Length: 235
Image (cartoon, rainbow, N blue to C red; front, side):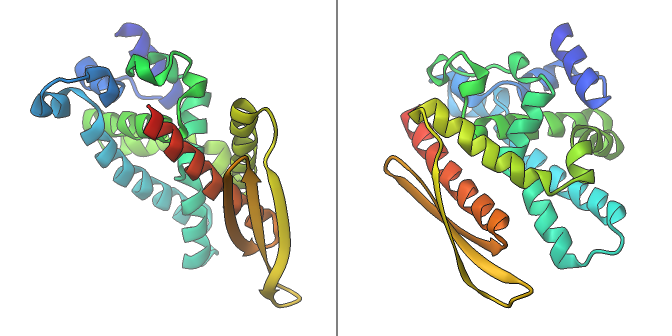
């Protein structure tokens, strides 16, 4: 309990007062096995995930609104979408060093690095919800600002993070990188649009965007979702 509380405090700047709430945030449903439904809901972090998802979106919107006063709604929406993606949440909780303090079922594997990004993201959302319930909105907002500090000042790095994440996942599963095929599909000379296809083994995904990098990031995101869906079905 103490080690978990100290790890969260070091990563987020908030020291939890309710250790039971923090323990629940760090307990994945898979650990509870055949426990009765109502008890499972009370002991796992699923309800906290639900709350944390909404709270994170609000905190990111608030921080982006203040960080980029000259950007329009469309630009802010795109930035928010990157910063709350499963891939980014997974990388944030990994970088924060919190995964060793989370508990999941043995069927998910003992190596946190091999857990699906969706599972890691859910754990991050649950921890943020616990901080909000324990300390209120300002504690939650401060934690998000601290955890996302580099990404907030350089949101474009989230796209690089996604491509790197997919590369790592493909190398872990298949021993090689995914293949990309990127072609111009429309737009003007000043704002060309591209369509990218990312593929590996039997998996293929496409994405579009203004510029090759954005199109490939979109395709990588779609490919990662496919890989995670298969991993969750097998777990």
